[in-house]
Length: 165
Image (cartoon, rainbow, N blue to C red; front, side):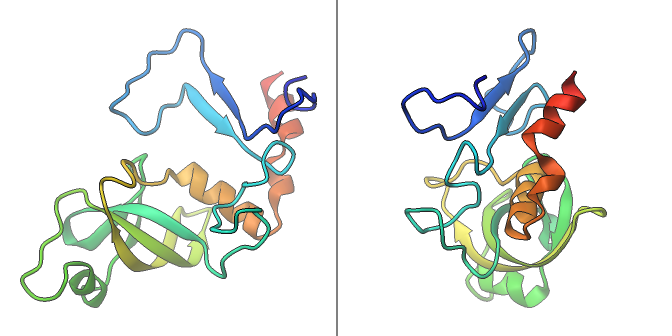
């Protein structure tokens, strides 16, 4: 009813919470809370600077956390990519520059393997702590990628309902 119903206002997403779950504000991802967004409930399924949500950038952009040795990980702590020495030097602002531990980096995805959970990325810019607190989760990255590639039928709300019942 919430998914298909018209309530007189635009919906943006549905938030599922486990009634007896314990939530930690200090954690970016929890298995007892999930946000569902698709074209039926939101015009902004895929991140885009377009205010109407119609035009997609040519590459999917994600925010990842940079770790030691230039490894990049998601909010749910999956190591998904590796920065080249050259990209790492650019992010650090040249020789002698230093990124803080767990700094966030905006990256453009060149290639993604959803099965292996790996990506080839090009780091674009350091993300200031004022604009983002957490990196993107792997689920969010994969979900947006499937929508960008026109494969959203693999993750439909009806499929979710069937699995839950």
